[in-house]
Amino acid sequence: MTMHTDRKIRLSPHMAHNLKKDPKRLAFIYARYAFAAQMTESCRSILEFGCSEGIGASMLHGGRKKYLGLDLDTPAVEAANKNFSTPDVRFKVGNFLELTEGFFDGVVSLDVVEHILAGEDEENFFKAIVNNLSDNGVCVLGTPNITSTPYASPESLKGHVNMFDAQRLKSTMEKHFRTVFIFSMNDEIVHTGYYPMSHYLFAVGCSKLDQEA
Image 1: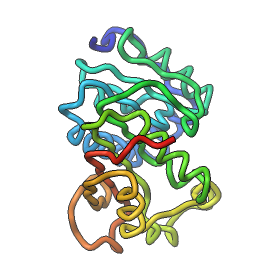
Image 2: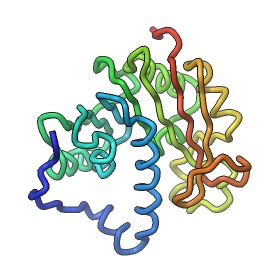
Image 3: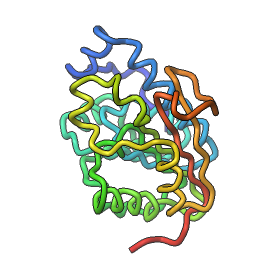
Image 4: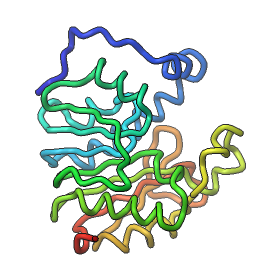
C-alpha cells in the first residue's frame, strides 16, 4: 500500500510558487496534516474533503490505510493522481456536499469549511461528513480562527466567506458528534491555549450522531 518512492514528483505552478516564495506556509500545512494523522492513526480508511494536490495524503494513509481524496479543483486532483496515487490511494474530482462514497473510519478536512457559504451549503457539508463516517469514526476539521481575519491577505479574505471562532466551531460540531475536542494552533504548534489568540483551530469529533438524510 505504500506510495511509489521512485516516482518523480512534479509540482504545480501554485505549489512551486509557495515553495519558492513562502516555504514556511508549507511547513504550517504539513504541521496541520501531522496533527490530523495523529488523531486518525487507528483508522483503517481515510476520506479527505479538499485534498488539493494530495500533499498530505502520505501522512494520512501512513502506508497502511485506504485513502480517498476529493476536491473540486480538477488540475490539483490531476497532479495528485500523477504524483501520489496507488491502488489504495485515490483522488477524485467531486462535490462532497452531495457525496456518498461509503463509510470511512476517518474524515479529514483542513482549510475547507471557511470557503463554504453559511446556511444550506454548510449544513450539507457537515451532513456529508457524518454520512460518510463509520459509527465509531473520527472527524478532524481545521480552519483559521476568525480572530486572524485582520491579518489575512486580500486573496484569503476573498475566499474566506464563513469564518468560525472556537465557540461556534464547537457548537456546530456538537450538532453532529457526541464528543468534540477543540485545539488551538499557532504556526506549527498545537496547544490548548487561549482561543482568541490562536491563528488556527482544530475540532476533533467522535461518536457521530444519527446518520442524516
